[in-house]
Image (cartoon, rainbow, N blue to C red; front, side, top):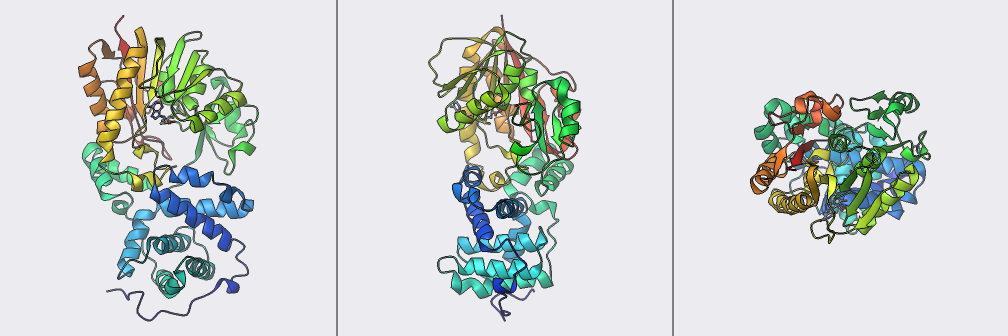
Length: 443
Ligand SMILES: C[S@@+](CC[C@H](N)C(=O)[O-])C[C@H]1O[C@@H](n2cnc3c(N)ncnc32)[C@H](O)[C@@H]1O
């Protein structure tokens, strides 16, 4: 059995010995706040990333804080297993988070041990009641430096309940391939406003053109500094997230309703295709981003703050796009936190919300018009199961099957009924997981 932390704690290294470590306590404290927020609630990571305290840091400290929190979240499963093996009794949650950050520095970011251990001990000491845990933190992290645990166990990358669901839905090989992507930092994909610009944009963003004409950028860092951002030449949008709006096949001058629109990637696509777009979202805060994105790109849309299930508007539209709120388990590459804050109990509740929004979408689709439903979830109840139930309720709708590769969809994602189940491993380097169905309303 491994020596336990409480037994024979070695001398703590302090950060005064780390004068070479420019990213000291403020950056690690910010990473701790970010990690704690991310693991405490669904929107915690996004809120933490846009918190003024993070923005107030020096750019290098800010980048380090983000990278550290994200690395910790991406490897949380194996890190927790390694900590569990060394802790007789778990310390308070705040100290567990300090330990998680220390482990990520040592084992993922490969921060030099003297800096990682010393600064993490100081971080523990700076927490309320933290002085009492300095020895424990020092001992656990020093244990990791002596005997580094192997983090590369696909069985530990996702919570067991999710891993089991993916295994039973997609098979062991796909589930392992999905799990293997959890630890990887994703590249940034962007959608060019003009598809014909994709090749030139790929050169400017040092990337490559993907099927469907999304561009996978090779650049890192703040996207607002990348070529063409200020001119609205492109917007950030995962390659999979760009597929559903293309499948609406909405022509110039036709009307389109984007029912859950913020931050607006799909609204921009529909507007760039020449449609007269109405973008609805119930979140006033999030819909501001739709307006900002429209302003930056010079595209136009009617923007409405409303609950799309209750919205009092009698219009019908040639195309309705419903990118419904969901468990978002397919977005773990950018939101690894969601794997750990999602719960099995919320899935049926989300499925009820989606069903209500789908019924509303059906009402707002013009006769002969298209309804595209999508969710960035890997869970059957929010995708295939939801669509089966919708078709049973709405006999005036029929699936309009997708052609192989249509809209840039990976061929492996096409299901026998013509809907798409895009798995993160369907694209080299990874992509967001999505379910997409296209329906036609009877004329
Ligand atoms: C998956 S995100 C949409 C992403 C967006 N379609 C895009 O491509 O940028 C889901 C959105 O649904 C919104 N939402 C959730 N419930 C809603 C409701 N009942 N009515 C309208 N919007 C809702 C959320 O505020 C959130 O912005």
